[in-house]
Length: 593
Image 1: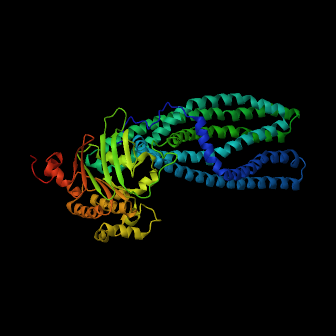
Image 2: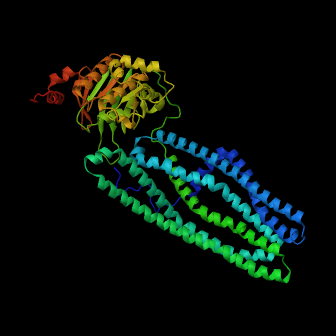
Image 3: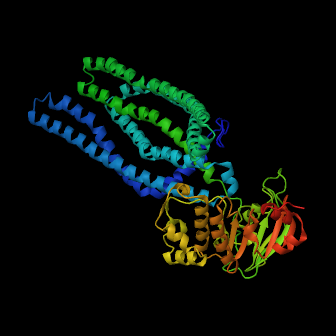
């Protein structure tokens, strides 16, 4: 469960890697360069129409009105109106193009993140809870969307507007323009200080926003457990604590933004005062026209609007780089287990599987989970693994599926080292039925196909017939809708569906990891009957606590403390009178001797 001190893998004092994050953001933009090029075209037109307004106003004041020419005045006013209309139209097309391009970037980014996360191995998911990953995919990409739709192109617009406005103003009055530039050093100093101080604050805000999203995901998934143990108020208190920390961090960040913005906004009234004071004096002296004075006042907003806009965008830029930094940390993560340069592909298992002196532990400072484990599983035979909880049974399947790599020893399939075998071909050949069954929201048919519509219905019906589950699926129709995680099904029903699902792809090797745990006797008999049919058709590995499910296995391994203590058939192990025999007698109501 989510606790107080989890830092989500990111230190609040951690500085953003701007260089790496910038490369990442540019990588998002380049595939959509046509969309951004179209946006820039509309940007140029929109900016041109925006900058024409003060010039037209100057012409009206200095030319049309003094000339007392009604036609010239009407034409100039009409031009002013048309110019404003064209500005609105071009601005509309600019915004629409940015929205479409931004949405495409976000769609591609989410697909890329999902594909990358699915390529990572299990230790990654132990480090990053699913709720946190969901927050990064949703919240952080939404922050980047704001950058691409409201900020990136607008920054170029602001830069263009500043220099064009400066050029026009300098053309009409160099002295007044240079006088206005005296306030720019103040703006640069304030902006630099803000950028340096705000970076850490925005990382903290993003971290806590992700923490809240992850907290809600994890705790809502465990709502039944929390209710059963009366932990609602405890959960509320923990959420309140995270919310309080986020509130404090966001308040500090927004306070800094407000101080920065108010400092910048002082530039406009100071500049207007300079124009009216100095320029007004020149107008009295006749060295500057009233139209030029009005044009300068109108251009003040155009000149300093880029600075105001950039000050507003600084928050988005900082948040976006913080989000991009977090996304980059995910995307730069590399799976611990990858295919070799020239992988070996398996299309059919001819001989079987062998574990040869395998040792395994999950961390360098942790105890050995498997110790010198060796066994062979010929093709078409069945192997059962039994033993106490935590003895190392499930680790065998984790190694077989290459979720982890052994520290010592080898795992061979048809004599080929598992490390040299292609991951995709390996997992195409081996099916898995786990103790904790995950079913997707959708119909039973869709879940049996693993949500892959390319699989024909005939394969599903053949799989159901192979394991003799026709009666079950008549009772539970294939069109029955399953809610999230199969909440409207019992544990036994979910395991029956998982068993049939493993058969749909017709994989040669099937692994059952506690497939009959926590189910009623009727469903257990149903699954046992189905598994009995499979014993003669598939190579099977069965991990079980219930020994009734593995009586007919060709070989049984009793694993305890990471070692194989006993091996043999069910009858041989009973006759031996060892640990297996004691387990069996305990389960079936007999006192061990």
